[in-house]
Length: 362
Image (cartoon, rainbow, N blue to C red; front, side):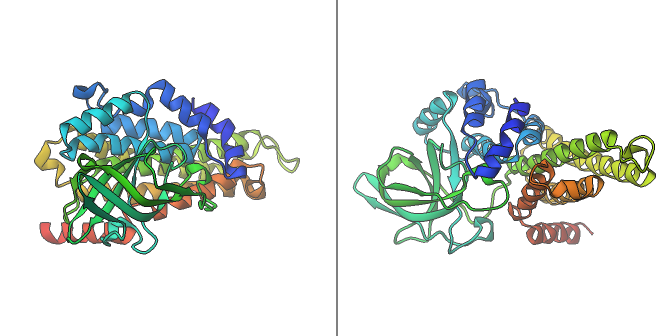
């Protein structure tokens, strides 16, 4: 499946389109339902298994991997959010059939929700319904979502909540605003909710000021190390086959090139060990131990994403000027991995978490 994604990635990137075929194949394969808990009919995929799968998908197409990764994490987190049982069963039932869901949290005025800004999107109770009004940006997978999980401020209150909004609800408007040069195929458009009415029970969760530990965000570094893996393969394959007439053999015999290939392998091994070990640590920890893992989870994202950027850069140095050709996938990998710097958690917040951890321990 990943190979098919790779074949389509160039066209999706050049056209700035959405990988509809990839999403359809993931749905038909049952992949999109794997993180549903077993008690609701899913496979309850472990964190370690998820990051391994996401890495492979990203080797084919980073946009597809990041998009479906958000869905996979949200699906698993629903069970931890204390939703109304009837609503949870209803949504999991649709997800088992292949429905797609993602959060709509970021807003132009508030920036990343991880910074703590209060949503300007509002929710007002009117009779037995909630009425949602607002504007969300960077809503990944917007062209194919069946459910939007929208953060909104409760009118005449200091509370903030999550509201489940099915795509068929009246008043949803998606504007094709995604013009990023990186991960062009994520469909992270602006979505407007204009007097959208939903049942009272679709107010699914009151959000606490204290952020929950969300291990499923490791789908983000898994995506970028997958892209780096694709760049590694491209560079090594090139080195083994490129033979200018100025040398005997191929450039893979040149010591300086071999040093770069070895450096890439070292960086990839180091990053993967960090990603995999923390994932397994989460899977094997009890509830109390998991609460202490936030700094490590954040550190994984920082280290792995920065490593992925470094790997792609070295890969391009091996290939040389050809890596900047529109025909080379390396220029796409170069653009795509840069997007990781702007995914949560942000680098400065991670460094602060690590500082707090260290100051408390010593």
